[in-house]
Image (cartoon, rainbow, N blue to C red; front, side, top):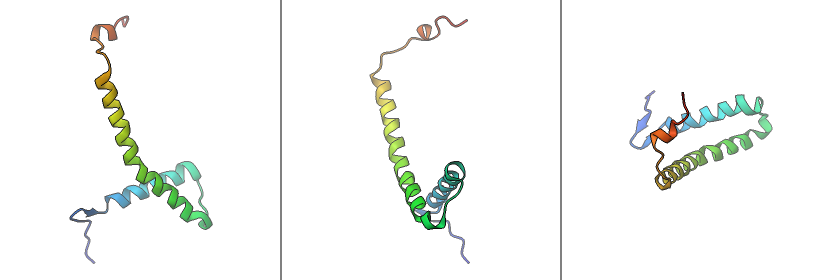
Length: 83
């Protein structure tokens, strides 16, 4: 048996990340998943997994944009009143 984890752009990191997210959801949110609805649970976590990168990218972009548009806050003003 050949143990190949990376082949060009194909690797196992994505599926390992998905199953880690799925297991955290199982333990932290649902605590039990019936076999009857297992595909629905997998579909939900696939949706969450596919959306996470886009959401994080837009959040980061929004923070950077707002930081660049905001006025400067001098250190003296920031630390005023701190003993």
